[in-house]
Length: 176
Image (cartoon, rainbow, N blue to C red; front, top):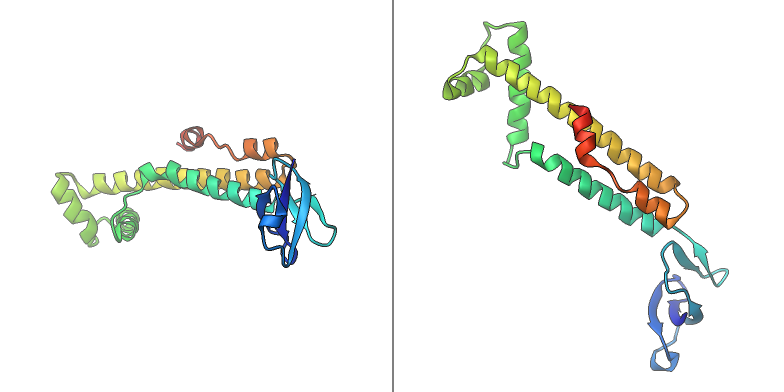
């Protein structure tokens, strides 16, 4: 255990100190016996005691879940300005082609010609790719939100950390 200096108005732990005489204590409180691990604790200015509060810990785990979800999705994303709009346009034209193969589909005809394939084959490929991507997106979103809910519901540090671990390859494999 060690001493700590806390802002009396906010409860923010400003520093761990050995000798408070070295610091301006105006508006501060000296806390003796600060726990070595403050995870899941905050200083309560009303009770002048450490109380359980997982808010900051949960927020950090939620951010890590979001980051790893993004990393799991990265292999399926093309990062080119407006490319997402082009994919949506081609998917819309592929669906329309299925309804009316005689229509005008400039996004499809240009790509089909460039790739040496028929518009029908390209439309089928685009719709299959879109279906796979949407399944991955839905599965990763469900896993992301489920992990965040599990973190928030867990009551110990170990349980929260375990809840934040998502097997993204398994989530993606299950979606396909």
